[in-house]
Length: 462
Image (cartoon, rainbow, N blue to C red; front, top):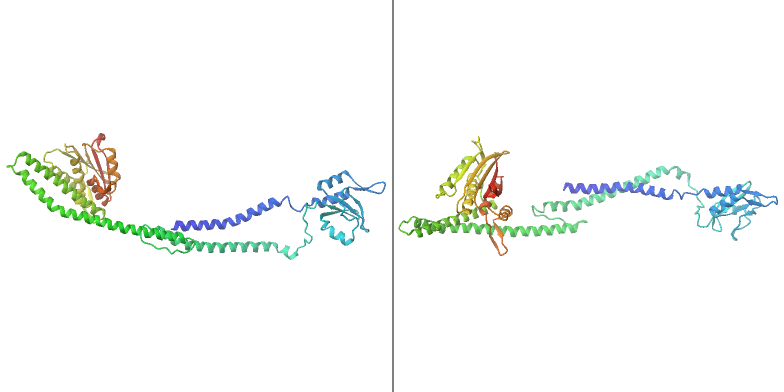
């Protein structure tokens, strides 16, 4: 939210800074365009020069020198010489327009010298006491006939400019405050609502210039909350179903296992029948473990399984778990080699002893499950960067790359196969990941040594 408000303030500040920049830029462009178009004194100088180039011949007539003729041609002008006193034109250049008078009164001379003669803009000069008037093309100049300014206005021009600048600055400031306050008042609740949208139910008032955005945020909020409620009902139903199935199947499964064990130990039965009873007992045990794992996974996911935090010795827990596994391996097909870091005698950890034992047992049972012909298992403990590293590796059949990627990336123990939801393979390893995550640790899965077998690496905070 602070970042968004800061961005809006920067935008408004940039707008305020752009105003004077645009002002001075436009002033510079105006000066650049009008520099060559300033009041052209050349026309007035030309009139004076033409007067200087007029001379009286032996016959008493006025003649204009070549220099003077070139000056008239330069401006495309015509010229006349008005005699002092009489007002008569005593000389005119060639090509004088017919509408130009050849006699002028004092009043006419006063008017024409500052304005126009027959719409021709004029400039004047002198030759002695006589008046030289040049008439320029009608589209050459635009003349101000009454270009007189109050002296007080000219004297107060700096103060007037400062007043204009101050008023413009005040106007920009008022616009900034009005727009800035309005934008912040409209944007702030929308941004706050969008930030809080993933976490809680919100409602943004649909007003201001972001009313449509606020409405969209409210609609998204309603949709998300509806999805959350539907998902919660679905997950609660699934967790309840799993818990109910686990409870209901426990009694009949225990009876099946008990009768199978009795048949397996009954020496009066044929050997083949006793082997079948043994298979029934083993498979029933697997089914019991599967149901237990499914129930535990459900509880861990929805935080229904309490984690009893206590301090214990990790080495002792590992040794006990390995010993329990070895005792169940009656045929000795899964020898376990336990290795502890040299000099490591005490490794205290705070967590749930039983859950961690369950996690280690799941990894060991996973090696037994996927290697019916037997395999060697190595359990190693060492301290790495202040963490306890437990490596459980077997040299069995291992997994293919696709299976390994699936185990690493599929986050849930239930998955959609396209034909409905089914139980995911590798449930025991998923429980391992959940238990370790509940203890703030990490789990890594990989191939074993020489790209054979299977490796599970657990990192736990000491």
